[in-house]
Each structure stands twice: as C-alpha cells, then as structure tokens.
Figure 1 (tube, helix red, strand yellow):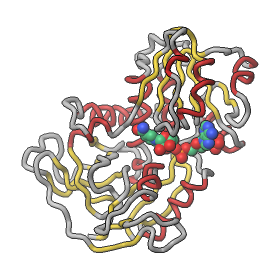
Figure 2 (spheres, protein in one colour):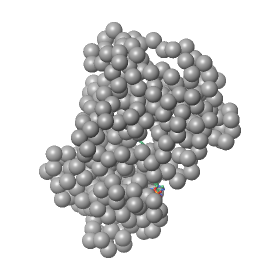
Figure 3 (spheres, protein in one colour):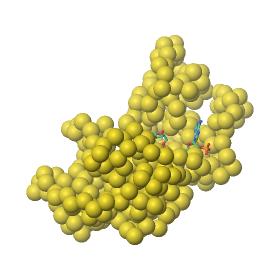
Length: 336
Ligand SMILES: NC(=O)c1ccc[n+]([C@@H]2O[C@H](COP(=O)([O-])OP(=O)(O)OC[C@H]3O[C@@H](n4cnc5c(N)ncnc54)[C@H](OP(=O)(O)O)[C@@H]3O)[C@@H](O)[C@H]2O)c1
C-alpha cells in the first residue's frame, strides 16, 4: 500500500519532510478494523509530531480519517466489511496518511450518511476534543439545564473551536468566541457564536463592553499559560475552565482558589493511549455527532480542501496549518 511517512524534523518546504513509500498492508487482529482510507484531515498534532519525530523507519502521521471497512479482527462485533466509518485514531499507532489503517472499533463510528468522505474526515478529532472538553471537562449539560449560562471560547475559528461553538449552542449556552481576523470573525458568527471578541486585544474590556465581565465557563483552545491570569480574572466564582494545549511555563493554580474555580485538562488521546475501560465513549459520541450532522444540527466545518492524498498535497496541507491562516478544517480526499 501507499503510505506517506516522515523520518526526521524538517521544514515543510523540504521535499524530504513527507515522502511516499510502499508499505505492507496491515492485518486486522483483536478488535481492530482494517479501513481503506478515502479521506483525511490535517490537525496541529500532525505538524507537532512532524517537528519532533526521529525514527529512521518513518512515522505515518494523520489523526482524522473517513473510509470503508475492508476487514475486521476476530473480536469485532460492531462493524463489518463495507461499512463506511470515520474516526481520529490513536496517537500511539500509525496514522491515516496511508491507503489502509488499523483502528480499534471502540473509537470509530459510522460516518454521517449525508456527507462525502472528505467532508466527514473533518470532524472526528475536533468533535471528540470539543465534546469531551465541554460535556465532560466543563460538565456542561448537553440536555439544556445549563441553558443561558455563558461560555468564552478562546480560538473560536480553529478546528476545535468550530465544533465547540456548535456544541455549546446545542446545550443552550450564550457563546462568546474569540477571533482576530475578518475571515475568522465571520466564521465564528456564522457557526452560531452570539458575540465575537478579538484575542489580539485585551479581552476583559471587550467582554465588559458586551455585558459579560465574568463568564460561567471558559474553553481555551490556545496557549494555556499565556491566558492563565486573564482566565482567572474572567471566570465567575465556582466557574470552570478547560484547557487543551500543553503549558510551556508553570501556571499559578492558586489564582483560582478564592473563586473556588476548577481547571481541567482535555486530551483526546487519553482514552486510546491508556485503553481506559470507557474508551468506547468516543465511538458513541462520534455516532451521536453523525446523527446531529445528518439531522442538520451541525454545520460544515470544512474551510479548505485539497484533491488527492499525496506527499505533495500533505506538504501543502502542513504548510497551510503552520501558516495560521486556516479557518475551520482542511481536508484531503482520494488517492492520486
Ligand atoms: N488536547 C487535545 O486533545 C487537543 C486536541 C486538538 C487540538 N489540540 C491543540 O489545540 C490547539 C488548537 O487546535 P485546533 O485544531 O483548533 O487548531 P487550529 O485549527 O490550527 O486553530 C487555528 C485558530 O487559532 C486561532 N488563534 C491563533 N492565535 C491565537 C491566539 N493567540 N489566541 C487565540 N486564538 C488564536 C486562530 O484564530 P484567528 O485566525 O482568529 O487569529 C485560528 O482560527 C492546537 O495547539 C492543538 O495542537 C489539543
């Protein structure tokens, strides 16, 4: 099978940074599905792993895919060959930038029937992250009992923010999303944010101006440490904050004490990495997201597309991701 690998940290304009090779097709064992990959999406994790990889055998990146089940392991009970699935996969295993990939059935779901493979590939990683961040980390009741409470979403037009805005709206929250450019501001408002504020300008004054000097929830999809003090100031007493980006510097947890505020981490690979007993929660939430998409309750989060999964196009996709100019997701469909 074709696979696109990276062997050592190189700038993306170097042709060696991502190269196409032939690999033997993996064989499904246990609870694995062997999936024929039809489309993939790019995430910051791809560029972060590419920047740190040192493996002469090469690493297959890619943690978003949609495709067709080709074969199943002997313990698989939920899928059969021919099923169309979507999933993010597992950071500890080879990724989706290959014609075939193995994925545990517990973290996969049937792809939204109303979407093409390319459109479906945009959703899994950011849906899992946003869902777990909001409905688990922040404990927001998705059935509506938190309706009317306020959430500040930092990094609203990114992949994760694009899903989080929509999931927060479904739960009935008032959504304030940050966006710094005209394109990203328009994007967050079109996805349902009630207000857009600019993260390149001080946020407290902007929030006070729109009538929300404090908020019940903060979902920070950008640097945790650089927003720490500001989040401690903006959160309401007993409020909740979730972060998804590793800290570069220590943060002062004490800043949250007087308000009895909570901070929690979200890492969407925790369940698969540690094979937690509830890892099938991710397959279940992806199945729910499929239903929401097919029911017209979640809008498209695709911002850009490239036709053909190839080393050349993946290098272009990494370049776009590194540029910081993307809104929503960039997807790549079909094999060249
Ligand atoms: N822990 C996890 O499980 C997990 C899962 C997914 C992602 N992540 C991490 O979370 C981060 C976001 O992921 P993503 O997929 O949403 O990324 P993304 O799509 O690349 O995010 C791009 C967005 O970031 C916004 N942004 C840029 N600088 C910002 C700043 N200083 N403050 C606030 N927003 C800023 C940009 O908004 P403007 O264009 O408006 O400036 C842009 O819309 C990445 O670091 C990623 O590695 C972690």
